Image (tube, rainbow, N blue to C red; front, side, top):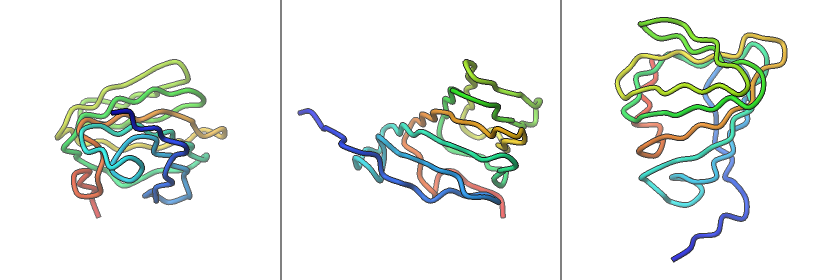
Length: 120
């Protein structure tokens, strides 16, 4: 059976500044628990608390730069580039450059506040 998504669900973002999260597929928009697909728009200077998610996250940056800090290194993921984060890896996301960033995040299984495991 087909499930048509007319518009995304707007999901509350964590972090020090407002960030747009448009969830097209996932727990909020389609009641899907196996995968989530969301478009993110982060302003300059945005960052969220470090986390150790229990899901794999595939991130494709469309515009700007998403800074991804892990225990193994820090990556500046720019428009046209992508990064894969495996479950259990500590990660800290931010958008320090003046233009911020626009990116697509795909999580397997779907993102949830319980499985993202953000630090206080």
